[in-house]
Structures are given as structure tokens and as C-alpha cells.
Image (tube, rainbow, N blue to C red):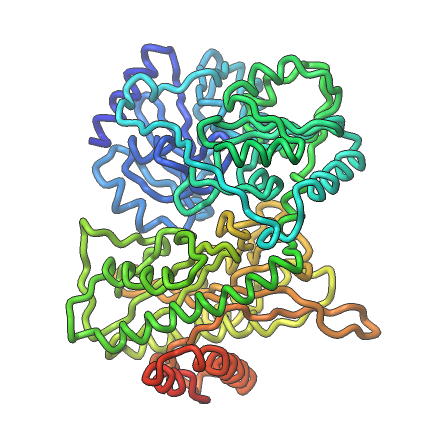
Length: 594
């Protein structure tokens, strides 16, 4: 079917006089995960990953994605007529370079401007001008034939009480307006769904596993206009908006309203706001380009969020620990598949009173499937687990107290020496970053080497970052804090601050054989202050045993062994009193000192 859809797209290109058509996996808010309404790339190519750009010409079609998805993309796009371009690989042109090489005088480049950031639009517009080519941003060619497109989501919006949010809407708006004044902005156009939900202490369900709602926000010093779908708000949430000085307007009406604004200077984040919104602004408006102030505000968790998150991680760790116990004691005795294991883990999480939903689709990947970093199990392709090899389970949950993200690679039976070495090497990397101590001012790009160093020593690596920020009942992948060395933007240069939560998840992946990842969440905290300044370190928030059955103790340094033993002592002390007797006895052995 995907090949037929590509042909349909080319027919529409011919009808509209379009030479190059560009698509991206995004919504009108540059969200990482999107609802079914926006899955145009999957419709054309078959690729289901979360990061992709698709470019179609009259005789070529290429898809760009990152290293997490190379194996998956090759498999899913087989026979689609779309060629994979592996981002970051030597000799592979970027999508922008590909576009530039195909532009020439009189050619027409088209894309839906609502789906591309203003910063991207500016780069492409400059290249088109240089080549005397034309750009169309007012068209979506798939509208002519994508009849299976799901409707735009409009799920109910709910209030996140202050006992969970930790700070009132009015206080957050006051802080934001102070930043606007600092930047000399009369107004702020905020389009990130995560930031809007955080700022207004509201949550929704318009993106699976990301509790946000389709919306835009236009803020001045004395007004706050929320553009959203009215059917998502009940009487109580409407009253709540009114109480906090927020006026609700139609979701799509922002485009026409922006043409009529009187404010002279507008604060925007050009990497997040879509190009059509900016192009609707009067030409007299001065754009103040800054990262959304709310990005850093929400990344530094407040005292209430931290307290709730710490408590919630104990419940979540308990769920994953009980799942591991069940799996190890049931494998070979009953039929278990990747998907049924995922379903069982969900049951354990649902035992918590304030559980909302999973924070992303659980990755339950057995043996060679674990080499696909973002593999998704399914009821339509059941893979049975056997008492051999390893199962990688990357999962998380949204609770009213916070959000979790954890990966454990679980030994189900005999494993090879190669697997044990790779597992222990990954563990070394995980422990090195977990125990980091660093001066104030250090950023994720500075610390990434701690995890990669033990692997680089052996000529090994992994094609992704080492860790990402975690949202508070929001997107599980949150910036600006991150651990990565190959910095392409300012995020990895963001200073780590107390209150930031970042994952620690190195891994090793061998295509066609196996994959290993170990992931916990780290809270940045203050450490000692010396003559050299203030130092920070990490508190591990995740309570769950790391499988010792694949560890080669002699590969660990004394420092690493002590770190692992101390971590496991904390896990046992925290979880054992909350477990049934037989499970507590197993945990004692699973967390034994080595």
C-alpha cells in the first residue's frame, strides 16, 4: 500500500506543479510524539519511528532518521520505493543538502508550513532564494487522498492540582512575564504543548502517552489567550481558566488573530513555533528570538515535584521489580511473549492508586529484537520468550506524582560470553555516569564521556544520546538537559542544575544478535563546596535491581563494584519491606554484594 500512496503523492505534485515535496514527522507544535492525525510519513513509507523527514521528487524519495531507527527503517520501508538516508553517517547528505542539490531556477518546493519550525523555514527559504526557486507553504498534498486520516484529537482536559504541580498558574505567569520584560517583549507566542500544559497546570490526552492537549498560547503583560478546542473543556476547567485570567478561543483562530495584533515585539522560540504562525504576523512586528523561558523553568523541578517524584519512583520500582521476579519464575513454565510480558508489567504498575498511563509504548524486545533501539512488540507479531537469552524492557509510567523511565535487560537463561561482556561493559558505563561529581557550570556534553569512555576504549559506541531530561507528567523526553557528546544544538551545553532529572542509559546493540540497555533516572543535587567552587552530584531515583546473572565481576573496577553494591543495598533496603516474603527473599539474592 505504501508504494501506491507514494504514486498518489507524485500525481498530486504533478497537478500542483510541485517539483520537491517535503514532509516531517511532527504536528503543528513540533512535538516529538504525535497523534494518528499527523502520521503522514507512515502512510507514505511505512516507517513508524518518532523522528523522520521524507523528501519526494519526481523520481526519488528519501527518508532521513537517526541511529535509533536505522535497522527498523530498513525493515519497514522495504518495497516502499523510499530510500533510507542514515543521519550522521559519513558520506550521507543531510536533508537540507539534498533539497539544495535538487533546487534550481523555477523549481517549486512545497511543504505544509504548519508542520515545520520557523528556523527550518528560514534556512530553506534562503537556499531557495539563492537558486531562484519558489516555495509554497500553504498546501498539504496528502489532503487530496489521505482519506484514512484520523480526526484531530480533542480529548478532555483535566486540572493538575497544586499539591502535584507545586506552583500556581498565577505565580508561573508572573515569572514568565518577568522574563518577557527582561527580553523587551510585548507578547509571547508559546506553541509547545508541553510548556503550555506545564504553565497552566493542565493536562490532556491528545497524544498517546503524552498528557497534553492541542493548543497555542498568546501572552501579554495583562492578558493570556488560550487557543484550544472548546469541546475538550468541561464546566470546571472553564471556571478554572477564568479564575486564572485565561481566555479560551478557537484552536484555529490564532492564525487570523495574529494578523490583527497591536503588540510591536513578540518573543518566539524559532525552533518550536511553526513557520505559518510567524508568517501571519504583521511585517512591522519585531521578533525576539529566544528559547521558550518555560523550557528551563519546567526542567528544574520544584520541591513539591521532587518529593512526589521520589516517592513515586519507589512504587514504580516496586512494580518493575515484581515484574522481573514474575518473569524469572514463570519463564519456561507458561507461554510468555514480548507483548504478554509488557501487558503483565502494566498490571503491576496499575496497582499504584495514582497511575494514569504508560509514559511511552513499552519496548519489550527479546534477543535480536533488542538491537532495534525503539522496537515495539505487538499482538500481531507475537514473539515467544524462552528460558535462554535476554529480554530488554524499556518502560515508564505517568502518575499524578510524576513520570518514570526505566530500562532493565533481564537474563532469562543461558547467555553467551559475548553477551556477558557487552552487558558488563554497559553496566560499567552506567555506573560511571551515575557516580559523577562535577563543578557548577558543567553540562551534559562534559559528562557524556564518563559513560562512553569505557566503550570508546574498546572501539565501541551507541548511536544515540546517553540520557535525556524527563518531564513531570509531560513528555518523557524533555529538554534542555541531556547527556550527549556530538552536540548539534545548545541543549547538551545547558548547565546542569539541582532539580533537573536526566536519564542514564548507555547501551550496546548488535544487529541480528542482541541489544543491551540499562537505564535509571538521576536527580542533580548539591554536593560539597570547596575552594574550587560548588560541586554537584546525582541522586539515583530508580529503585530496581540490575541483573547480576550477566555480570562478569572481574571486568569491574573496585570503584564500579562499590558503586553497584551500594546501589543494590539501597534497592533492597527500600523495596524489601514492601514485598511479599518470597519476593523479598529473592530480592536479597538479586541485590547481593559482588
